Image (cartoon, rainbow, N blue to C red; front, side, top):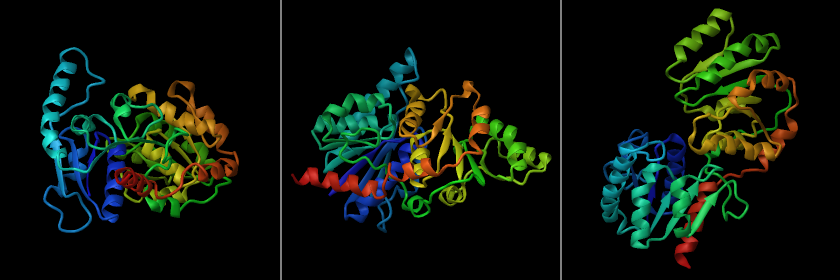
Length: 345
């Protein structure tokens, strides 16, 4: 069968797209990607533009002229909507021969999703956040299955996370190493927080691993050097699963992919949601774990420094063990199997 996988804009959406692609191909299907010329879609999948000679990539990839609508106003919103309408007509030809369309959300998913509905193709949605995105909320009634790690009624609740995160998972107790995660682009607030608390962490003998992001990498690295603190600073690394394995506690934004990677690693965290995320979805993502007594949350304006000081001497065993029960491996494989089952029945 041929599946269209659509969506993107952010690394979180695209990581899911990649996981679903890999699982679909492993199950013997071919995949086409439909994304946007905006966002990160092109940088993730442009190398697969030619037909795949091995079994590792998309059969073809297509980047349509679309842009986000939610945060625009007036003429900007109108132009974005017009782009989406035009791109939907293009997507009709791409979706026509597909057996199913799987959306991972984001503005990139709009054209292929609307095309799937218009052509009455079997349509599936994976929602990565606790607060459902507007496009997914609009099209949910047209989907055969709606996958969410936050809803009890979801037929598949396991978030697609790379298997290596599960392989490295282990229970934590005393905090000996702490990792600060602001994403590949970095988070200035988390960088400043890490530098502020670094002397106390050094005093307590706690090792620091710090993802500072590309923009502030040099600045953060020099700041640690000036304080005489041997922190492990990086902007982006592919082996973040290894770094999580070495850590006992995390301070992080709460984008869905990072949050569920931390869960798969059984690594408790203090989440500091990005305050300008659409629909405040990062706050709701982290709140899901807080309700399960598996991590903590603190908004930027509520003094995370004091909260972190309280937590660094805490035993993490209970929270770590709860995390192991919230997610299981093979989430992507389970979603592909459910798609197959729906198409066969």
